[in-house]
Image (cartoon, rainbow, N blue to C red):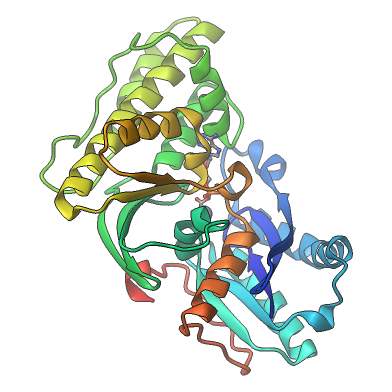
Length: 339
Ligand code: KG4
Ligand code: ZN
């Protein structure tokens, strides 16, 4: 059985073919970041237009590079949400039109479920329960994964997501969008603890996060530097990441102790950051948890592979709800509490 995964929730047009029997066949991703960088963030209208322009040619390239004919596709999995409504619509319209043409069923996959499951892409087995830290441009959530489709959000950000903070702070230092990856690079050249930025809500009684106080503090610091030099940017980047890592680590360790779960995974665009992974790896040695999972770098940010893979896992668990009615069923605010 071959699944076509379609991801268009934000600014990546990404398609993948996944075989239930043989695993990942191939994938293709077109990132629109150059189109958005001059605006310092994603412009929804541009995002949907770019998806519309690219999706058909990407699909043709995917078939060509996979040596698969479109008639071999058995099921089409579209991202149903959360995400930008215009962007989600393009993926859903494309997926349903193709399915109608091929007379194949369609299913909708929750984007966050895709992120949560993709660290296990090459694992033979997924052991439950596990704790997942989802850190992306749109989300910062600490989730207890009890089983496929059974997710409990233990805590989430009350304001900005970690990736959003990195992108906004990067912009204030004139670093182009998306800033997360560049802040990560800058941080490697920075000196530790030059700035003592706040760690908001670190000791709060719950598992929620808040990063707006950190953002304000960094913005104030940047404003007070008269002639900001490149080394200042390196040092600021380093201190931003140190503050974020401290908060994330403290909450994760607390959640592990409370739930007694021994498997932990990090996922989402920000999990591409090496410093974050390194700091969590240290916790294995301390036996905070036994096993740490994270996606391969190319599957940290949005991709069609995670959509096709989540669909495959759902099929294997008999909880993949398909339809031949070709309905456009997107939900820009689809929560994983509600699958
Ligand atoms: O998962 P994703 O592609 O989109 C959402 O679902 O939101 O995440 C995008 C976010 C952006 O904020 C980007 O700055 C951040 O991931 N990001 C990184 C890195 N690469 C991308 N953040 C830190 N370090 C990176 N290497
Ligand atoms: Zn995402």
